Length: 67
Image 1 (cartoon, helix red, strand yellow):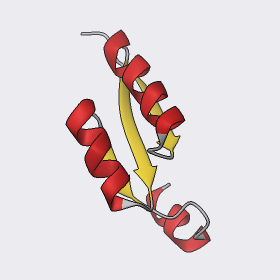
Image 2 (cartoon, one colour):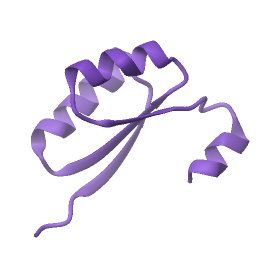
Image 3 (cartoon, one colour):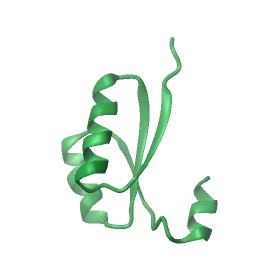
C-alpha cells in the first residue's frame, strides 16, 4: 500500500475549499483543513470528504498543541 502525502490547509473559504477538493480528488493526500469558523468547516464537509479542525491560526498556543 502506498503511503499518502499529508496536507494541512488553513482556511475553509473559497480558496481553501478549492485546494482541498483538488487534493482530495487526486487520491494522493490525507487532508486536514483548519478554520476558526465552524460554519465554514460544515460547508466544506458537505462538499468534500476531508478531516476538519476548528482552530484559530493566530492563536500560537492552539497551533503548538496541534503541531
